[in-house]
Image (cartoon, rainbow, N blue to C red; front, top):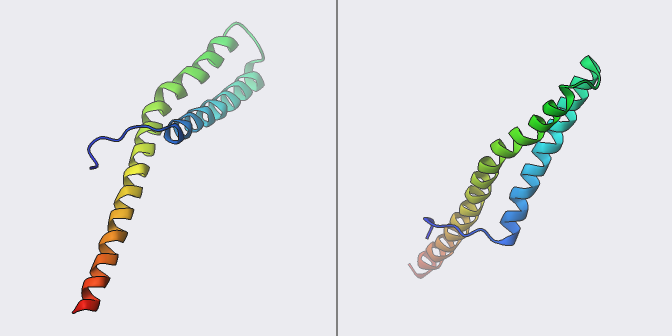
Length: 94
């Protein structure tokens, strides 16, 4: 049951939001700090490119992992609730 999780549209959107937020924060901090320290010079645009590339490479696997684990947690919670309901019914019978 929990071995394979297929990504639906909601899960993909969640991953995309995580990646987008990571990129936005990275670009904001990197470009602001670089501009404040050095202004716009020849190294500004490569720094901005890395500020986009690095969070994409880092947050994609993290976003995928967190989304899949969240989905698995929801499934386990539903299974636990069903088991609890069954236990209550069996205790009432006793």
